[in-house]
Image (cartoon, rainbow, N blue to C red; front, side, top):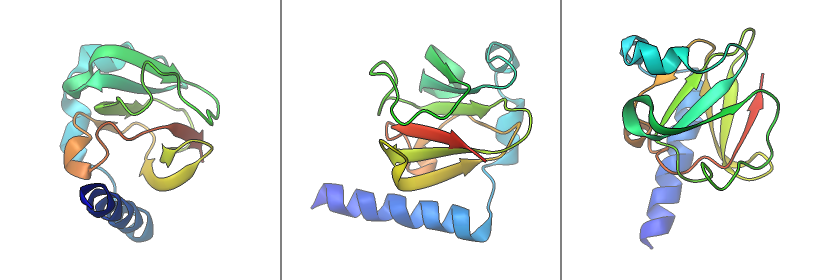
Length: 125
């Protein structure tokens, strides 16, 4: 029951963000500049801890599954892509809820967006 309620909240949050075109908080872009600089240009990066700390994963192309080191373990994210937004998905193969992160945007804590420890795949544009 608890998982069903959480999943419904995730889907609702994803639909709200996608439907309304809402961006993640603008203030996130100023946090942890050194860690963000470590994410290479043209990549999207995930960290296992909030505030861009802990193990970092970086993806440049479409990734239908994420490696076990980050799959369902991400707590912060940064889109350092050069020309479009990144789409994070709850399930593998681009399934389940979707969180769209604009180019240049950073999210120091995915938890308040109900996306902490939920990302399993990613795609661009």
